[in-house]
Image 1 (cartoon, rainbow, N blue to C red):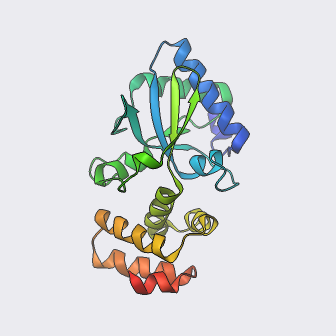
Image 2 (tube, rainbow, N blue to C red; image 1 turned 30 degrees about the vertical axis):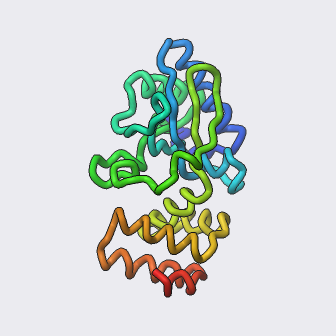
Length: 205
């Protein structure tokens, strides 16, 4: 039955419903509490940064006793609750996933998060068993620059919507190059910035 809904998009109301349902399932299963650090479209939507829809909730890190930890792998109890919500709400089985930090070597968490990342998080409670931490605007810009080089599409649209300054883009590229220092990446990021209308930033990186 889930196959029917595999391309279902979530707006603000849908994301709230899914996360509320996840919190309910965690409490019902006496699992957690869990702290999830969320990036991407769901963070943009729920912080009011960009009005759009998304297909999933991207977990870049977890928060445990006030410190960031790797979300790879996600806890089995959390995954069980995610799958239960998927069945209840007609969502993809992996509607909440650790895609940004899944790769043990190349993930965003594993490669190093931007300086000051934790201080820019905003926090929202979903009951007693789930806390979601949304990444800040600066970190969205950093992640979107990195993603837009290879994948373009909505990453570029999000980047435009965030209205970054030239200085922010230059800093974003510097951070992205800590993940990919290759000459090829630098050439691609310069080309991307030129193409999407940021020639000053392209010249400075």
